Length: 181
Image (cartoon, rainbow, N blue to C red; front, side, top):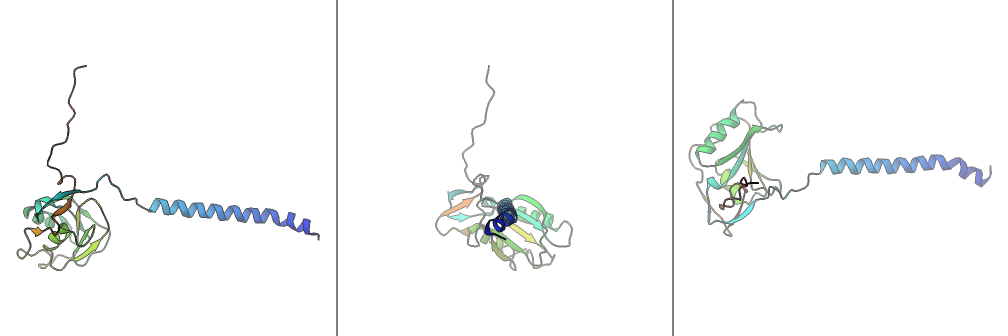
């Protein structure tokens, strides 16, 4: 068998192999692109000068990861009476044993203020930029949300806090009005 015949014989399988590699890489790249959530600046928080952060400036989402139906609603009601803004009360697919407080970083004043309500809570960062704080709750115990010992405000170290847009600016936004045409 001559060298030319060998090349002709191998050309089709090699071409198919190369095309399969390119197709596989394209599928992998597309899969990764779909799963990667870009950081959005649409809901980014607003930096505001604040010496003391109070609950009325903190937006909280309460998510139930336990077996007690309606427990997230109970916790949300308690947090609302303590002054927090509750944006979402729902469930999470994550199985929660002890409370978990989730925010952009664990050092944010809003995260620390909310965590003061849950003495046994674990803090978790997820690099969010919207200024909200998630409370993931699980088993219902007396230690989960005690009636005393929580902070009603917290000092902001550098005097600036990143608050959700709904809590940020106090200037009203322009409202469209009807015109005579």
